[in-house]
Image 1 (cartoon, one colour):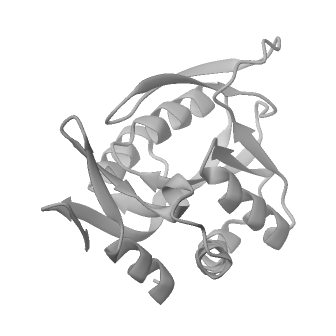
Image 2 (cartoon, helix red, strand yellow):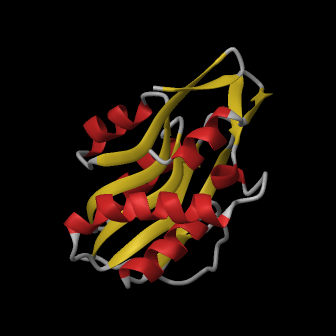
Length: 186
């Protein structure tokens, strides 16, 4: 794990959303500012983990904070990327995904991903696992092959539950937990 990532995690603020401890981090919230060096380092580390899985058709990410990660990965790996959006376009082949996180429920919309494509899924964080789990199950129902999922931060132990439930391997650059309103790196 990069020292910049470690330092940024250990200095993150924690707020409570109901009973859910929410970490505020540049790569998962867009503030404090995302340093180009931090983004470059984490994308380089993710690229090293993803490259052995080539070839695949595209990188798939989730709006919003997966976008800067997928953009730079796409450029570095010369692989196109697709964004699962929070907005409905009303297209004929659009797929709606119901997702639930530790603090909200919402819909996501899949466009531009086709049956029999092979993808890797990339996002900023797995916390409750609600977003990743819903997306993986929907993509699997669409007959999309998911080689693996990659996140920068795995908060807690829900990634293991998703792996068991879906059979899709998930990898992170760092695993954390929150105790006493502080980030602990595991």
